[in-house]
Image: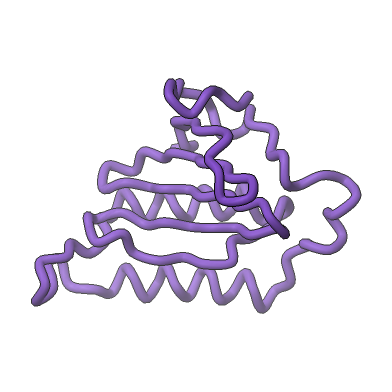
Length: 134
């Protein structure tokens, strides 16, 4: 249930209806094994980074962020895997999905908490704090 961008409320990720993924486009975004492997390899790569910050002071992802991202990837596997998975520099991980003029962004922070943002035509239309499965 999307909420106003100014007031994020907490929700379970399983309860969220993803506006950019519907029955009509589901065949188009079905995950293939190669894309799934790339996503998991990216997480493995993140897990091998040293615990200490890099030379610019950026924090590498925490174990909680990596685990939370993995659980989220499992949930998104049949709904559409992210187009990008990157570090946020503060111990978290950011995943983005792009569908035409819509974009969805999942920000998994250092503590493993997640925030979902939905953009239409570069404008934030929904923002939701989520609890990831343990």
